[in-house]
Length: 289
Image (tube, rainbow, N blue to C red; front, side, top):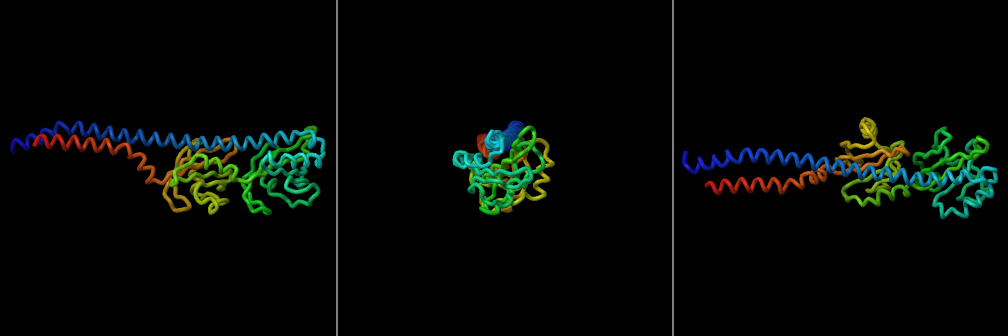
């Protein structure tokens, strides 16, 4: 073996441990970057989930205040309806007054005394007497997808009326738009029945559709309020989906990132490290030669 060959092997022998350490360091950077991205996406989905609960709580506070009005408590439905119509624009939502049996008595979208059809705004709720947020439903008159918040009106500890405030799901979808997600990412909000009520990509095409049984099962099997699952979107796009459950409403926020995009984000910081290792190794070999 020539002296030059021996020098090359000597350089390799010296550099090999350093190279092994550098590769381990590269892997550590990969793990750190992956954990950093996971944490960042968990924070984004959790922030949106908290925003959803806050927005619903804002409407709930309005309904609770209206339900405590002395006018409706004493049974003056006409006067209460007139006041609601005067403030309808300020409230930004429709309010329907029901008797205890669920028959609509008055609605801010109609003059007092108008014969009203049965409204899904009350039918979507369960038997609870406390404040409720409904799953989304399709309004048979307007054709738009709505949600409703219900509050019973008590008189002497007895329910005398129900108030249901109805507003379009687009009021909640704005919370996703405010995140300004990259175009390739998909933001979604599901109600407590796992029905899609907001989506950042092609919302009209997917609105009102339920998440697949397999995906719902994945969410339910994941421990904790936040997490991530590997899934396939309705567009047949393979994604990693970060989710967060809104505790007060039972709704779920999803941020889906294409797997290629996620992998690129994780590997991006490694390019410089790997390139540096290769340059140092090549330079050492050339100098030995």
